[in-house]
Image (tube, rainbow, N blue to C red):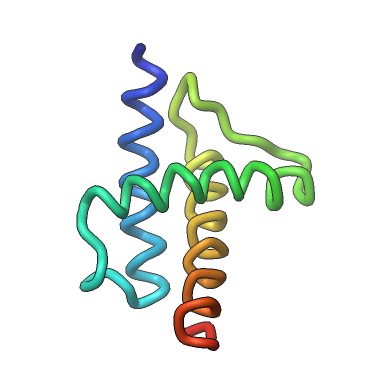
Amino acid sequence: MGGWIVALIVGGVAGWIASRVMNRDAAMGVFWNVVVGCVGSVVGNMVVGPLLGIGGSVKQFSLTGLAIAVLGAVILLGVVNMIQRGKVR
């Protein structure tokens, strides 16, 4: 049970950081920050993790896992921006 709580907290922080980096913070609330961060974590672990030979863990917090989640969330928001506006901010 504790792994889910950590994943949601890390997802929320990662989503918030990514929304600030991509200048979408005003358009997103807490719920969407958590969703983007959690999905971004999956994207990051699928894309960035294998490229660097590292992976995050849901069972415990790590700065590496947070960094991968943020990178994945930035990638996700970049794709969403391209679909919505036809350009990356």
